[in-house]
Length: 143
Image 1: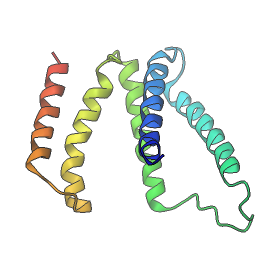
Image 2 (image 1 turned 60 degrees about the horizontal axis):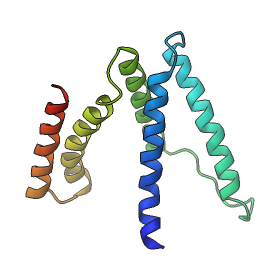
Image 3 (image 1 turned 120 degrees about the horizontal axis):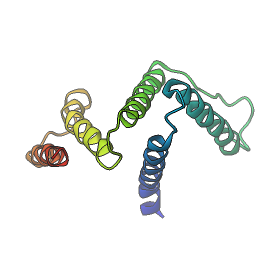
Image 4 (image 1 turned 45 degrees about the vertical axis):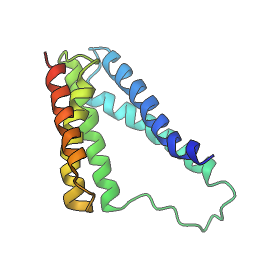
């Protein structure tokens, strides 16, 4: 059971990411990308409201429901920038087969350093080798 609990969030991320990129690349060119963001966030909001209602069933109505904090707002801004970036990248003709990998490879490299600086995560020789392999992979995908 614990293995399922560990891997289930990653399955959600992978499934959601595949769905996201295939759908984002398929949005018709006639649709304004910024208007599409409104539609996709409206869909996400509706889904989140349904999930909150379902997952909070049985809790007292007085239990706090915290939906805003400065860090939550930053995640929202980050998500908006990611969505806008991918929509514009695909609209500009970048390939769905490499765009996400290149972007996420660069993000992975940056997060190794930032995770060490901000959160005190270990910065090891294995991670340095991993960063070099990520950079090499990103370089190969650009060929």
